Amino acid sequence: MRLLFAILVAIVLAEPVFGQTAAPIPDGAYGGACRADGMSCDSGLCDQTRNLCVSCGLEGAPACISHDGKPVCIFPSYGYRPLSLGGRQLYCFTRNSKDCGHVGLSACENGAIPVCYFGVRVVASDGQSFCAACGDYGQPCCADASCAYGTCQNDVCLPDKPAGGASQPSASGGQQAKSGSDKARILAAVADCRLTEARALHASIDPNVAWYDEVTRVLMVAVERENKVRTLYDRAIVRQASGQRMVGQGDHDNALQDFLAAGDLLRDAQRLSQCKPTLEVIAEAIAINRRSSATNRAVAQVALAEKDIGLCDFSIAQELLDGVPVDTPRRAVVLQKLAEARDREGRVERMYDAARNLHRLADERARAGQPGQALEMLQDARQGLVNARQLTDCRNYRDRISDALRVIGGSIEMTESRVKAAEADRISQRYDGPSSPAPVDPGQPVAGQPHPCRDNSVPVDASASFYAQYSGGGGSYMIKRPYLCDPPYIDIPFAVLGGGSMTLYACARKGDHFVNCQAKETITFTDIRPEGKGTGYFWGKEGAWRWMVIVDH
Image 1 (cartoon, rainbow, N blue to C red):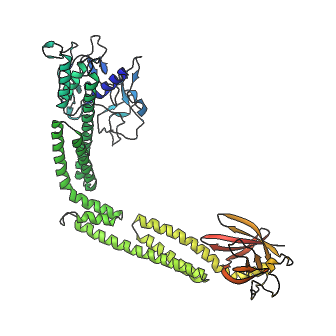
Image 2: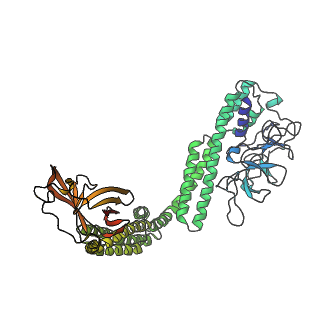
Image 3: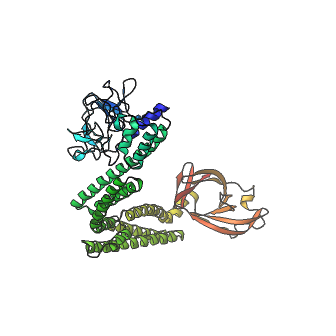
């Protein structure tokens, strides 16, 4: 467990820290010379070509060497694997990420030459470009020949004083400081944000001293915090530079988004850092960001408003235009464009509402038994929707209108069938014979005699089965013409069949007949045709087909 903790400490403390200065580095520590054997380091990996201890195993850095001599990376679960750059040394990269341009990932394809937004571009042995770490000891120099540690010498970050193989003194006068003094010096360096010095002192102490874990944790927290600050700062600078490029290209809306994102990142870094020099750098960057945003904000808001008009977000566009000075370039033009778009889409909305109302009236006509008028209304409503869809430039309106056209198309299909109901009587006579009038008293058609549905002496003429679209059906219900006995409707003891319709009656039973019978609903058949071994009688209800199949006995 102690070994695992020491490895973790080595990894964290190997990370570059924002704004640090050089300090004497003992042999075996990061940036120091390799141990006397010329092959080993207390932390990290020995770069034998430079006799230098360098960090290893992290994203875009050289692979570490395990105890069995194999190259390893710290984060294999994230897909990081040792890859060759053409030489003997392997580096840690991943091909698994969809992102690009960051340290440890593939370079972004941006024209002829792939681009790295962080780190430096290197080419693997298979020709693919990756982004390698830079700025630490033994790593390539970053942009503008900058190094987080040491100085840029022949494109490589090296200690200010070459590592010579002999241990440097860890205390004044070449004498080892007392344990308590070392602890105080490290904690004082951390508190003063002299983290490079604190790391060098930490690397020289005996890990078996009683206070080692305590000091290590304090140092790790500070290093991790300021490394996060550096990451936020670097991301902000990239977004700020992107915004300036967008301004040069006239893309003010995306430029504003870049400036706002950069400002958010800088403020996050400002809240996180506890180092005064770093906070001063961030404060100056925030001031620059504010100046850039202020000069671009008004023009960018007008551009964003114009874009929102195209997206039909009229209220947002109006709010953006209201928030800029009246003399802002193109504001008047975009305001006129907004007024025209609102007028156009207002007409579309009125056409849409008129078509919906016409559809509603058509349904009422159809229920009232006037399918011919209903069909004309539905056809007019459909044409109105087609005209509205051609006029609108708003996708949300176009989608709503398309949905309404699908619904009205189904209604037209059903109503067209109802228009044919005028022929239903003629068709029904072919199968059932002419219609007969309903009895004067359908509850007791013959005075003093039982109702046919309750009289077993009355023969059964046929049987009926009922079906509904999407849900199936079946059953067998007696028909003693013109009565359909006990149909599958609640509180309906019988129905009276006509040539092209069926009337449902609700009654109270009294002995062997019915009293107080009231017609509850008349179903008009829209189609009558042979169906299997019998005759099918079809009608529409609630947007679906229903039908009854009668088989004569």
